[in-house]
Length: 502
Ligand code: SGN
Ligand code: CA
Image (cartoon, rainbow, N blue to C red; front, side, top):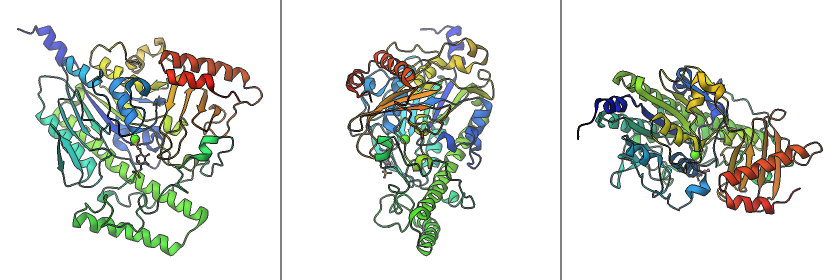
């Protein structure tokens, strides 16, 4: 059948879309989000040449669930993927990738996926098994073959992405997910980045020594730098290079450079004989040095991809998105990891460049939720959004002239499940408005929390039940119930009905 020229013109004008998706990369660790120490010139470049979302929230702050939401545009209770556990993500449901394929896109997922299932709706994939490894990682290619490669994971992911872009079928627009392992625990930097931040002394967050007063769940978490962070596995002090799987895969050159660097660190700690707060603060400095060094490689690799788009001429018709699966604590509340509805883990970075459509330097403050990512991608692709998708395209918010007219949600709903392992964060649900946050922790914690983010942006004072908050609480609880009904979270509705009111 002959295809009319207008169909061809339409197809060709549809943009390519690259979704660069990192792991645990905190927005507060990025230059474009105000960090003055981190070197993230390439993420900053995407923000400068496009838009930055200041309130991009997740529905459930862990890895697999966030990825399942990216693929479905739905909350965890609707897509069935509530925890990072051993259950497989159900790929029989309607997926972003499948809808894009049906509308004529070529699709690929390269790098970390972490859904306990093989990619579905992707014409090409080469993914890390599970969490993957930093050094000399295995990748699972099509149909299901595991191959071990030599090199550093972020470089390999970029190489495979560029290789695929080179060999793809050029008659169709493409959607490519570049899934990075960085900056996930245990933060093994690339050799060239070892020591990149050794001359920096990171300021302690004001709430580093949080006493968690009035916050039952925070008091019982197991994710503190002081108690949970491990000297050996996390900070590479006296690592057993033969026994530990992350290291016994090193080649001799990698081992030599890596051990030389960390042997010095181990010796420094042994010489200093630190205890108490001095030890905790030493751990904090080492944590951030490793974390930011891993991010250096991530950012450099984003730069390589942007360079390739420039050189190949693809840049002008390719949307580039950079986001992380969730936020992360960089010492706030004394923590690392994520999970809580509190700001650092609820919010995740999101920058997007679309030449000629998004005005450079645009900022969006509205409450975007990761259920909106899939419909936005579909909107960018000119594809129809399936009716059961729970999110909404925020493309209108990105188009400067329309912003004032776009009606947008005033409350965002959150529901976290994984408990007790790892990190012992009680399951909870809640909502966030531009000013307030209300949350209920269940499963044994059974406690409400309320924050006034205008007065208390770092969420140290739980004002739930304090005189004067009665009306605010009643209003927020009513809204929470409506959100649960709208999003069909029946389990939460039952829990809400049975929740203590004190
Ligand atoms: C691993 C980490 C945890 C982390 C989870 C989930 N432990 O279990 O610290 O919270 O992954 O992370 S580790 O000792 O194996 O590093 S997620 O990003 O995949 O959700
Ligand atoms: Ca993650």
